[in-house]
Length: 547
Image (cartoon, rainbow, N blue to C red; front, side, top):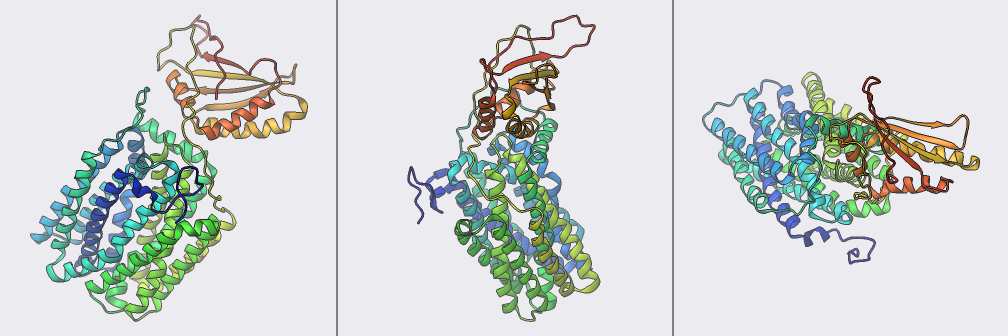
């Protein structure tokens, strides 16, 4: 067991279980995930009996991932703007209600292919609302040092249920019908709702007004756009979801048509995938210590390609299941690694939105891939679709030659909390603006190359955190003087911009101040822009040095 005592550099894979709320939510989620997998088996197998084409069968997988692609960004903005516990309660209650309605409709014989897809879409719309709040809340349950282990445990929990849930779902469907499977899913939400209702997280209270939903979404997209490493994760996640999603989308057809099985066969195959995923979760922490991020992801692409090709050529359920063991392990290794990379690269104020963008990319790839592979299967058969998908997986692994993933590094992304509002000579309101900021540096000639390189990173951080029109200028008459200049729309946004600074960002600011050669600290001017006819003073008093 890896040391996780105070002062140790590493944490145990089971260390998050020492936190009671994580343990309770993890256990309740285990039951809820179990119900969700039973429901998934019921929906997928029911579609094979009522659908008129392979295309509709593949759309079951698409309907479970499309809501995440469509609504994840909104859900991420909600997760960062509202009480995450309450958001999860709303989402879980919504899914409970929809699951009850699905059970009733099925029991009464009112289900058609399109109503089944509609109910599946609604249930997973609740999942889309829940996921960013749930994943962002993990950081509220455990310390940051234990976050990778907590993410791995969440993957482990889901895939523990996946290892037996589908098989049990197949038994339930075969013995009692799809309605019984849908009822089991409805009951599974109750425990998690009770745990969330009783949880009272101790969270810091923001003194700033809540951002509007549109502004919050814009801030999240801006953060992602100005974070190159996160952009690499999005591309790789989309490529993996697009190609690997073919296996899960077409597995009902493989079970029915290729190996000539029934609902139980399908459940056993999904169970094999889940067992492989449990193995992948168990070894993922060790793999991070032995392999680079890029090597892990390439291995996952290649392993899943083997899984897809084996499913295409196998005539026996046991052979297909052996390949699914490999596929399940690679699925968890890739997706959990993407998730950890995003969370460890993102501060708490925006983590829900960044996770939602990652989910949009990955699950958008799964949804698009499920549709395309379903069309290919409809025209040429599931075997051909899986072979083409395996080639796409190998091609997806080569993307790393152009966009290699960064090696994981532990950054201190806690709020810096160094900024103090300066005393003002004008009576500003939070919505007053636009605000113009000018910071004056004195730089020696020999330090100019290092200053320019450091300011390039400073500009990226400024824009990422909400600054607009950032520029750097040099005085023509006194070349030692350099002016950093940027805008914020309002005074409130200026304060919000500065409070987003993290300890990791402060390293750049300290490097710049070390290059400043003036006898006084860098001079800061804060101004409010006004029309020339206003006749009011523009310049405000100088304040303290910014972060």
